Image (cartoon, rainbow, N blue to C red; front, side, top):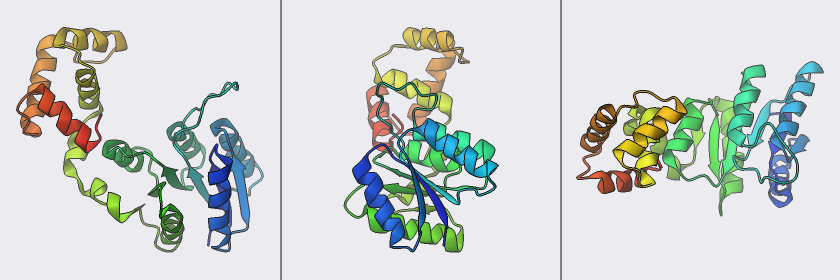
Length: 222
């Protein structure tokens, strides 16, 4: 079983509950961090001391307070950690419920498991830890297993997500074009944007833009 684990969580109650769950698995060396910057610092120090962490369990959302931090989310933390310790096992323990974002955690950040916070989250977390340790497989609870199988989410690009988000805000084509230009995103011409949106409507079998946004929200894309 894993010997050294870091929990990145800003709520004491959840952090304590997770620690208890780990102790039930006979894991004794458990460290905590309420801020992503602190978590990264602990990872770096452990590597420097040649006593690295085996597993990182992190939330995605961290409440902003008086303290200024470079890393403000679990996504940023995991990305930074993977750069200095690529082989560390990672579990996201979060209330996130958007399919696209969960899938991107596996595809883009290479996490090993996603466990949703909820009624049965602790047994699921323990099961995920055991599965990762013994089988070294990506783990997702049964209720979310469809996310990794959904090919449509894989084929949608970041550019498409940006378009869908702007559409969901009520932007018209010219406003989307201006927003993309200001962000340095290409293609940003009105004609290109309109063609892309039409392709998305065909892809998702949407009757119009409103229907397209509705489908996108159901899939957790926006």
